Length: 462
Image (cartoon, rainbow, N blue to C red; front, side, top):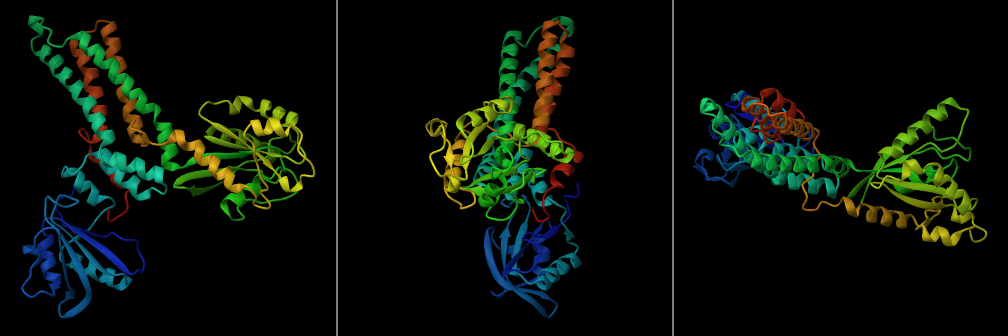
């Protein structure tokens, strides 16, 4: 880890804009800043300026003025990285951005690697590893739920729980290790009954966290909504109407949609991933059958299913028949099925079984005329109330899931060791493994390879 270098990077997106922000961090930050920044206030040196102050002046290259800028001063340890840092706010000209970065490089400032500012913050104990990963999730969040989830993790909700679990297990591990030092005396310092109770509680907590991963993924990446139904009931028209663009091909001929089409839209701060699927029917067309097979997979993945039928040419018995045919896919308690009666614009008389359809909370729409589409949006928002972030800790990171799975396996190995009455030294090995896997989540146990893999996925400048 090259943490002694002074580093710089553009923290705003590349390209022209009103302003751009360039970050500099490291031991030589203020010494270098004094060489290229001439403040409006005569006699001021950034190396002597108080922390968390802003100064107006010019970035200069010899006698040439590059730009008028504002410079924010952050002294260690009261900065994002925990090091001496400055942030230069300049005009958004691409030439100005490059010129300032060139000046910094000439003063032996190195270009930062992806995520290096956040990695330095982690190494300087500004926050733990799971909180650092939440920074990347916060930057990429595109919905209220994803934002709330990242904010909760960044504030330490998840990492504090893991640290508490690890601390309790560590206390017992110390006692087990102490027993090994007095093995000849056959002393027992760790109360086995209390340890078994702790293992049971740890196992329960970890299983809850593991079970929350599915929900965490939904909140983070968007709630998958599958639009299904027989051919020619208006599924593609509905998708286009919801997305307000011609995303899917619409045709009067059945079997037009042969593969799933996906797109995302945010409704009231909630991200939904809509999936238009091939029509559910028997077909001799090999390609269409592949599409129908993929429809079945999308139904399995979806949390919400919009079951579309032609209300003008169907009846309640026909609809029940379709629902019964695919009930094995729809009866998952974690899914919600919303019946959509489409083509009300073609209705001549009241549809057969109207009362029963109403009792099934059917939404009657005309996708073609964009009638009652707002009712679908309302129903979708109502459907995700159960996904709301409560006080329960939710995980959404695959690395965390893997580490927790390994920790759970180690805890089960410890329990099995007690059943088989294994000696303390073998029990201690499994306890160390559990501690190791829990420590990997927060960074109490880590390697350069793990850090490189995590922070390498960040954007440069963060």
